[in-house]
Image 1 (spheres, one colour):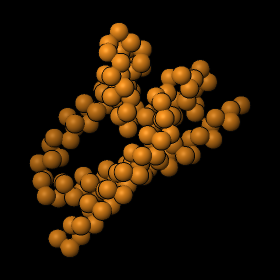
Image 2 (tube, one colour):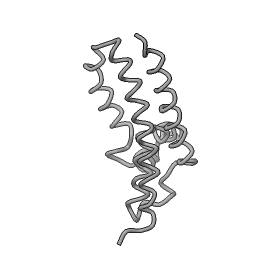
Image 3 (cartoon, one colour):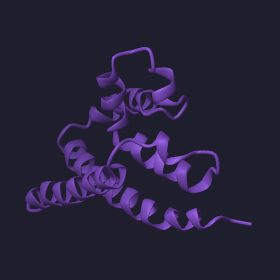
Length: 127
């Protein structure tokens, strides 16, 4: 039987949708100006995936490293949205695994990219 924490899936997906839409708008405008950007994107996306903690737990893998390294990696928006989804779906994934102010970070990234991406895309509308 699903836990009540599964209800967190909806706000996480809404925030991630806003973030992804803003990022897509930015990349659409940038790609229209620089077609070669499509050749670079697979490398950028692969690097972003490895830095996001999708294949490892950032706090556990970096516990012997300086704290600021883990803090920077945990502020990565991909890491934030994955951690929130893990928290919602995995019973043993506790709030201790989440970075401080994770909901504020998730909302901030979503708002920043949704608004920033829309404005950036809109400014080039007439071109």
